[in-house]
Length: 259
Image (cartoon, rainbow, N blue to C red; front, side, top):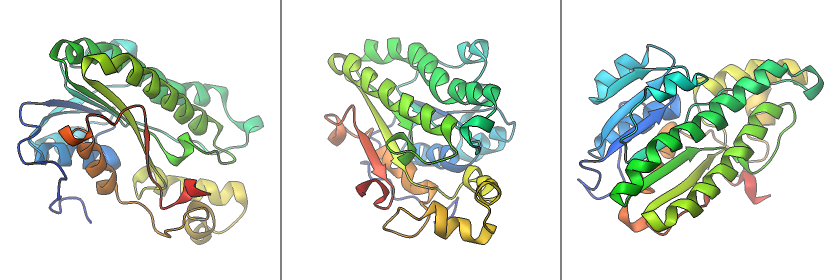
């Protein structure tokens, strides 16, 4: 499936009408696919990204763009708080052995993938609880459940996000608010494309071997996940049929974590 193709949303038409959704990292990849999917399901979409490219995506889906750096608490404080669905998707990657991993890069990754989701939940939860309905969706990873070498920052952040989601699930249950992680394997996004060269360098193998020998080594289904698959799962978790699903991690990893 290519960006712009029709999306078969597994939610009854109109079920998300009147719902407001905030998606981080929405200029490309999974975030863009989520913006398209939620807009197609009838939701009003707020798209957040540090890149001004988010403006064009917002125009394409009929949403509202917000250019913001998620490492800035003041920038987060300026984002909408009256949203019904929060999709914590923004992420970043760095590949290096622990002893060579820049401490400032490690800290920045935790800011974007742990602290920002925490601060955004603080902004959104009062509105969700007041309405007796809310959905917290966290785009985690197979690396939120398993580890890989040379990814200390990413693995640490995604494991922390898993714990944060479970805590939010317990606190939100009495107020109609669910919290879940979606855990894809390697998704064909700019983030993954960019790390192929890094993986080749660190492991000392040609780039054309990285996808087969590294990225898909643990997966039973030997293909990269499409961003639209993750977006469809996110929209599905907002449906009434999923109101009892909370505090869980939905794996879309081709069987990677079955090992």
